[in-house]
Structures are given as C-alpha cells and as structure tokens.
Image (cartoon, rainbow, N blue to C red; front, side, top):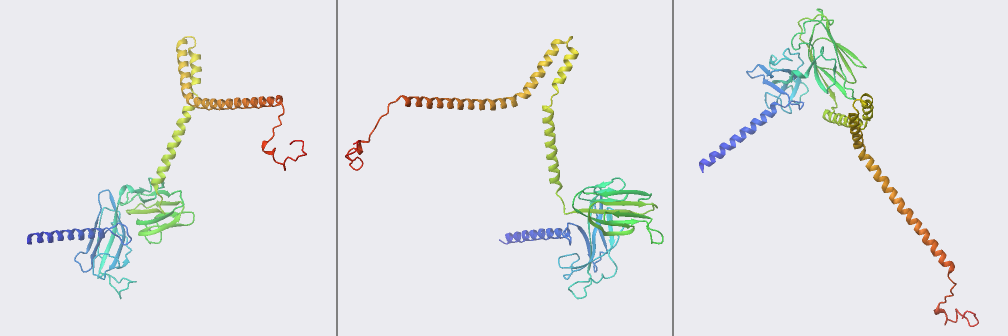
Length: 383
C-alpha cells in the first residue's frame, strides 16, 4: 500500500509539472494585444541584463513592441493587470536574423496611468516575430502590390543600399478596403545639418502626401482607402541600412472564396467554348476542298471522306433532331385523335336529329293524375 501511494504521488507531481510547463509555454507566446508574438524579458533586479532574440534561416526579426512593465506580483514578464509604458526606439538589429538588446539603464522608470501610487517598472519586455524573407518585396523589382498584406523594403535590406536609386511601387487592392502602412524600420541618409533629406520616401494617395527620411521605427504613416504610391529616391547612396515597411488591408477579404469563384467562372467559360466549338460547322469547308483538289485523281478517296463527313454531321445532329421529331410527332398524333373524336361526335348528333324528325308524336299521360279530381275536373276534355 505504501509503494502504491508513492507511485500515485509521483504520478500526480508529473502531471502537475506538465500542466505548469504548458501554461508557461502558452504565456510565452501570448502578446498584450492577443497576437502570438514571441518575447524576451527580464527583471531589473535580475542578473540578466541582455535580452536575446533569435529567428531561423531566411527569416528577418521584426520588433512589434518594447515596453517597461510594473507587476504587482513581482513577475519578470507581462501578465494581465500589469501597468506598461511603451519604449520608442529604433533598434539596429531589426531585420536581421538575431538580435541582442541591453536592458535600459538604472532601476527602470515610472509607469504613468497606473492604479498603484507612483509605481516603478520592475521589468522590461520586447515582443517580436520572425518574418520569412520571401514575404518582403523589393521596391526596385516590383511595381505593384495587390496582396491583402505584405512587406516592402529597399534593395539589399537589411544590408546597406549603397548606390543611388529611383524606384516606385503602388499598393492597389482595387477594393473598398482601407490600408494601414507602418514603418517597421528606417535609416535613410540625411543632410549633415539634419534639416533636409538626401535620401527619402515620398508616400501619397489622392488626399495627402508625406516625405520621410532619417531614423524611424514602429511608426504608422497612412491609414486610408484607395491607391497608395511609394517612391524611393536615393541620391547619395551612402552606407545606410534603408527601410522596411509593412502594410495590411482591413476589413480582410476571404481570398479563398474569391479564388474559388474565379475558378468556377473560368471552368464555365471553358465549357461554353467547348460546346461552341462542337457545334461549329467546319466539315463542309473541308469537304469542298477535298472535292476541288482530288475530284479527278482521287475520286474514291473523296467519296469516302465525304461519307465520313456526312456521318459525323449526322451523328452530332441526331440527338437534337430525334428529340424535336418525337415532340412534333406526339403533338400531331394527339391532334389527329381529337379531330377524329370531334367528327364522330358531330355525326352522332346529326344521326339522332334525323331520327327525331321521322318519329310520330306520342301523347303520354301520367296515370297518377287520372283519379285526381282537382287536377282533372269532370268537365275537362282530357279526363
């Protein structure tokens, strides 16, 4: 009994450990905004002062959010109910495969708009995702973006674009959706004075336009409907990283349904074309050509080909002709029967009328009235 109890306790501890591990893993993949971002975090009183993030091969790291957090329970990562304050910083490792960020100095910073009196952040957290390289469009290689969402970058990003460029791309969904355009990462050359742009992005739609350059990150530029044009002008071509943009359309449209409808429409169109080709009359032309070219030298061959042509035409026309002939024949039969019945009826009526003319008039009396004095008085000539 003691051995069995120990086994049960060990099993209970194992199950409990697995449940705790699964809860921890689910929390590691949950963002403040509900999206499945990965994250890296650490407490200020911890010995870990560097946050590391890693992506796989052919992936680029995108930082979605970095923030200070205050946990009343003393945790080192975000949980519902924590107070947070966003950190706006352009991290150089964005767009690369791996990234390492040093914890902001000091003992954190005050987190405003928190229910706790003057709370000081006790942890720092960075949320990120790994974007496959093939999801990013080179602005100098593609002239139009029509997908529901995607990334647009400068040539060679995240490496330097080096040489001058003049490129343009349009985001044109041809729908009534709105489009949100965000700068994920940007490092474009500025004038030495910092008051003008040597290299820049010029973004416009039907209502407004904006020119941006320098260093930027996690910044929303446009949120509008209609076509958006993006022009990249690089005159200096210096050792700058370039840019990485993200756009998305909303509300989203189910592309699967649209594709299925298109396929069905195309299939119906092909079917109609095939039926049209079947009913087209090409054989008589071939028959005439055969008769002209081979009438004397190949008379028997011409006759054979002609017979085959007529047979094929007859075979194609038989089903329709049979149906029409059957319908017409049935109608004719019904009309003939009705006409015969009508003639017979008229003949019978005429015969009955002739018989009535030759019959004598019969005075038929009702015997029930002969003994009734009220109906037949004595002085009546009929009683």
